Image (cartoon, rainbow, N blue to C red; front, side):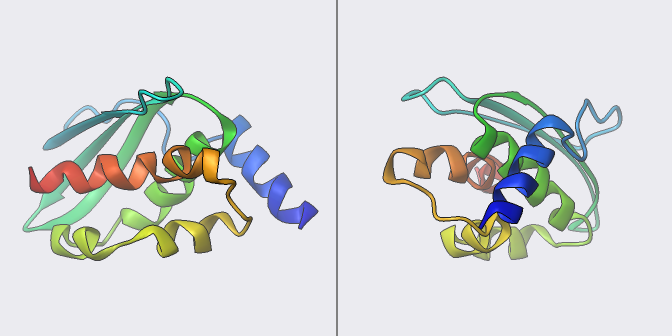
Length: 118
């Protein structure tokens, strides 16, 4: 279990895909009002396929690690595939039990990116 906790802290301290994507086609924003976590995800989509992805945000280790891990997996996915992802997908990425009070934190990145259908 400790190795997974270390993995979350590493993604929190050194997030992958962090920063603004200059030539994005989609900008998605979500905020967790219950704790104040904020997330903005940028996608560059060509022919329904995500070519590039990045994010900016602030929040707890779980929300930022989730964003880092999810953005690692999004490149190459189609927009329709993103809409099929569920909570279990995020739990598998995190590999640690998520306390009930942190579920919204863990799911913020998924909720944000699934806003592409709005």
